[in-house]
Amino acid sequence: MMAIWPPRPRAWGICLNKVELHIASVRGDGYLWLGPERFQASIGARGIVRHKEEGDSGTPAGRLALRRVLYRADRVALPRCAVPTEPIARGDGWCDDPHHADYNCMIRLPHAARHEALWRDDALYDVIGVLGWNDAPVVRGRGSAIFLHAARPDYRPTAGCIALAPADLIAVLAKGLTAIDVIGG
Image (cartoon, rainbow, N blue to C red; front, side, top):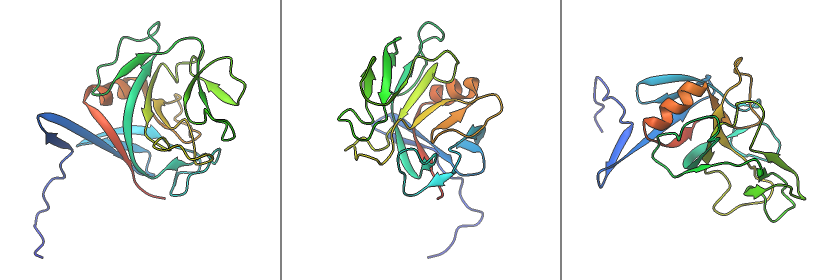
């Protein structure tokens, strides 16, 4: 096979039946790339991992589809995006207890199993992109609550999620983000 030189620019939008899909990529270099645009990002404290386990602080490698976007309607306007949106309420949470039947699912609080609240005092979860990790089917212990959300101002590592500056998060959603290729591990 003959190499093409100079190399062709890599496509980042795929048009299928007039629906444009936009897939970003994240590597361990601290950036999310969407086409030619680069956004500073935080990932899990252990970096990108090929074999994700609950509580390991790694960001799972693979293509993570953006399933839906949850948002705090009392703090932010409905985000423009290519996937379904849903406002969150004060009693919403996410089960991260691998021994419970609701593992890696959105739940209502109070809840008997270990969980995290989605309605937070800080702004990290004002907009949450629910990423498709360990959800079809759910495998107990393989990791839960892998989100795209707002980064802390110092971009400190996450517990396994991908985090962007709040304005960048809104921008990548508005550009039609549908998935993130997490490369490495």
